[in-house]
Length: 195
Image (cartoon, rainbow, N blue to C red; front, top):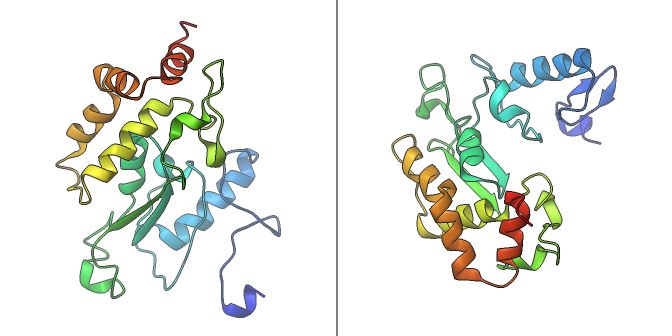
């Protein structure tokens, strides 16, 4: 059905595949090449969507119009945002689709505002969408979520250093633990290996 709609699918040896890090090197290289053909420097595209894991945030030179990301640490989010409008000389804003001439990011967050509800009695976190597994330290996710709530517009790269410091500095993370109390202290001890 997707092929009938004109969708381009990334395939590895004839099998439709998401882009992730668990492929053998030749398969990963094939996927990298396919996604760079669609989103790389000089690519010509219309209506292309890529669903990928964090593998594309650093290793590939991609240029996208819109980013939809799960909640992640701010430094990781900034890496992902760096894939938006990456090649303005080749693809100036006026050449992009109407509604996408300004880079935009949508960050998906859990329905429940309490990340602390994912902290187990031993301090380890385990929640949906990789919360506590992909990104073990919920303090950095909480700090990032607060930044998103406090600043609905980020000016990149001018704000990068400030954002990273506000969400990763040890004092900022300790303040989150102090302000939220409860099981957050146990989580901090677990993350720091002092439990």
